[in-house]
Amino acid sequence: MPRYPPGPKLTVDAVWIRRGRVLLVRRGREPFRGRWAFPGGFVEVGETMEAAVSRELLEETGLEARPRGVVGVFSRPDRDPRGHSVSVAYRMVGRAGTPVGGDDAAEAAWVPVERATTLAFDHDEILRAALRSRR
Image 1 (tube, rainbow, N blue to C red):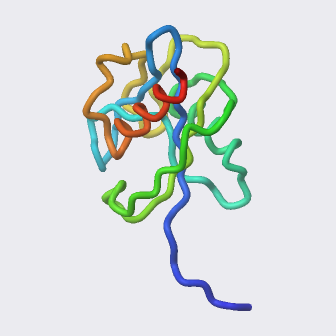
Image 2 (cartoon, rainbow, N blue to C red):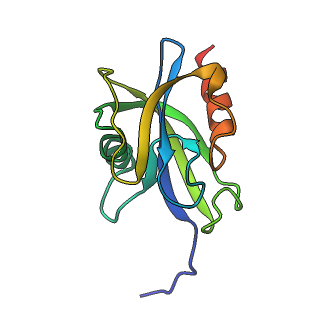
């Protein structure tokens, strides 16, 4: 079997915008502990990207939703201080409710889009891309 060089980690981000608010989690762990971010995380072995984004959303907010298209692929090598990762950001749809922070999220909330600034990782860039694609 051929040997492959180590590569970037694969991650997903859930972008759910509804009625002028975006669903965010306050990170409970480093990196970026205390900063707001999109729910998301690493894709597990044997898991589809779509299953991963729905799982991460449920684990971190208690809300269920499904992906409804790709916002974009974000691959800047310095986007995560833990190492090179590539994230696929998905636009999510579902029945909105009151989010509750879980897993590694200290808090989860619907935040007015105009107040969603200085997000963790490259999530400001992801939010801008999501807002552009809605127009």
